[in-house]
Image (cartoon, rainbow over all chains, first blue to last red; front, top):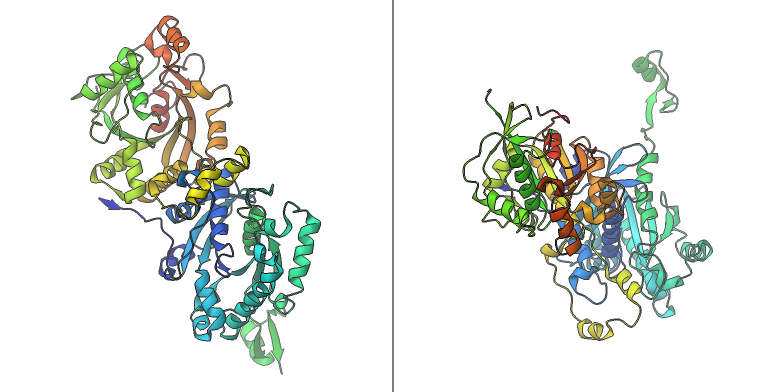
Amino acid sequence: MIKLHQGLALKPDGVYPICRSGNTRIVALMGSIGCGKTTLIAGIFQAFLEGSVAGYSFRRSDTLVAFEEKCFNSRTSSKASVASMPRTSGQVGAEFYHLEVMKDADRSIHRLLLLDLSGEVYEGAMHIAEDAAKLTLLRNVDLLVQLIDGKQLSSGATREKVYVDAKRLLRRLSEVKSITPQTPLQLVVSKVDQLVGNGTSPEALEGVRASVAARFTKESLMQGFEIREIAASPDPETTVPMRFGVADLFGSWLAEAEVDPLVLPRLKVSGERLMHRLGEVWLPERFEARE
Amino acid sequence: MSEATEKGILLVGLPKTGKTTFVAALWHVLNSEDVDDSLQLSVLGGDDTYLNLIHDEWLNYVEVDRTTQQNEAIPTMHLVNKTGVLKCALSIPDLSGETYLRQWVDREWSDKFTAAAKDASGILVFLHPDQPADAPEITPTMRLLGPDVDDEAESEDAGDQPVWDPEKAASIVQLVEVLQFLQRNLNGHLKIAVMVSAWDLIKSCYATPKEFITKSAPLLEQFLRTNSDSFDCTFFGISALGGDLKKKEDTDRLQNKTRCASERIEVVPATPDTVHDITRPLRWALSWSEGESA
């Protein structure tokens, strides 16, 4: 008898073999309970069931069972009358969802690990420094994606708390050095259909982006900061397409990987020693000579 | 006559995807010698009871009963080409669709399956147009049906969270996982022929079997295309029954307008000379070129 891989979400100690394969991006999905992290994970996988996504084709996944479980409540096979998402329990801890894709244009292979943590964990981190300090695995991610609940932004009663919570989480994680200023940050307004209704025109979305940007001026200084909008599972009563904005968001995560420049450290060495080491070779871009 | 090479073919597919009907029609062609250039049977194997049973059903225009995990014994078939040269002793473990469903749920290969998989020289993967490969979502369905549908059910179910059942996972995801298991646990380049069963039912809608897979099972198409370093892949449309046996006009046509039972079979792509040769997917999967059997 041969035991086969379980297909479940991976624990942190299970991702090393994937990372070792190279060209692997770890994307952390952050946000409060109900902000749409699970819906986004399910939406990405469901999109691949319909075809290539943003010019990338499915190649393999070690977490197919986990993806299917996330998608189940939104399927007619669940016998539910309305689409819903299973809430990620705070007891579960950090889990990773794995996708390996091939870029259709050049057949390059890209690996993606989506880090899913319960909204409860993030809400704990907002308030308690010790909890925030435990999230050290965020230091190793390639991209932070902070989801902001568009439905709550649509109401004056909840809007301010959404902004405050999101900023507090980023600040807390930064103060305890669980995230670094060098880690690129995306703010993603989820459930944007609840904010703009059917009016997902570029102008309407630009308006959303501007109003969110105005609240995150300090955070916008973080590397690669950008704001995007999605409706992974829009309200049935709107005409917003399923998985609105999800393909573009997914493509942006991998596009980031392709343009990452090779950053070499700038070394400070004496001119004499430098010449001794390098002989006639001079690499002014990399080395700064010191008197 | 030289000693035959042992070859195995693995039939992969979830329940009701046409594997058993394929084997019944194959058994007919191998025995009947109706089809020029097809592979033929040199000697009968051991216990042919099961093969003869499903063959009788096929000949009697009865939908061939699907295989359960208890009744899947198929003897080795000793195959010769048209000149009588023995080419191989072929074993086809007609494993039931439940075998693959259990792999998805239980996450293990039985010893029997492990042996069959490791002996396989090629793989035939079956999909049936009546077995939905997609996984319909609630929201698009609600939009399609309109706002007032199922209001009563909604009010009854509103507080109930569905309970995850892996058996209800999208069938195409289950199939891709089965292929990932094979990819991970078998060494070397695998030859995979994707078999679209009941081709006669859909051939007016799709130009080629590959087009059907691309449009109806995009995840599988992506998986096979992006894993060309692991798989050598091709696509066949197979009409093994010859028509919809529930329709009188189809059974009338099959019974009265064909010269022999093998003409019920259609395999595409094909030339007029090879359209009834159901052994062609085997030859491809065993790396035997067309018109030649070794």
